[in-house]
Length: 335
Image 1 (cartoon, rainbow, N blue to C red):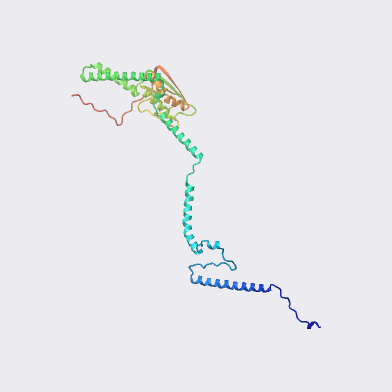
Image 2: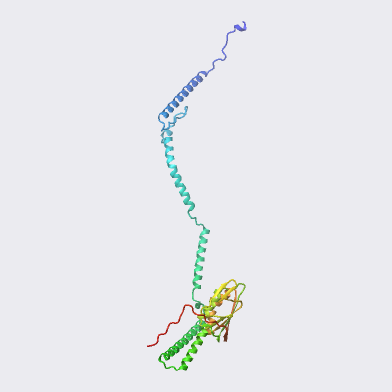
């Protein structure tokens, strides 16, 4: 038999299982067609209701949920959840921001800070106690014998002043009654003029007292130190004081200048000599009181020496300035 006359054979012989494959393919085509139809329906629904989101369908081929999954509570629609989250998120964010800021600004006391605060409190208490102790009277630091001596000197000084007051009252009574003669009046006037001349600095003076020598250290002394010495001398009853070549009067003052301490226009140079007439037994303890004038001199780096003398000569004098505003009060004659 010729080749062209041979019967044509099929390319492949049908195999067992081809029919099920065709059925699966047909089923897949139907499923795809159903999905396309569902998508078109969802799109049309979304166009008709733009305010709502189309529900999502599970992809084709997935099996139904199990009984446990079906029993689970359903979640809200995606559109509704997003809408609620948009409104809740700003409030939550604002509260979180304020809470974070409050936590950052809140003080956090550590152990080191507590210890530092405690030390600062103790330091402040110590300063207050120190200031209070320095403000106490300097007599509290004296011994009993020194206090007794100061009390005796004060009593003696008070008795002298009382006698002087009594003498002056007696003289005033004699003058008012006219019993004093001319010589007594002249002697009284001369005595009063002498006293006024010494106190005003117009006359030289001499008498028992002390000599003070103040030598500055590496740093010059300030005017406050000299003022402290003068105040102690006046409180102790010093009658006449001379500093260097300057006589101390009621209007005298110490001033700090670029050249140093100036006393009534005269610059003082170290060492500064003080001549004081008065009761030495009262003046020396007053100067040496703890925390007093001489203590300030030594604390400033200077040295101070106080020497008792039986005779102190004060030679510097001052001219009495003319008064510019004050005038004597006219004396009315007695009736």
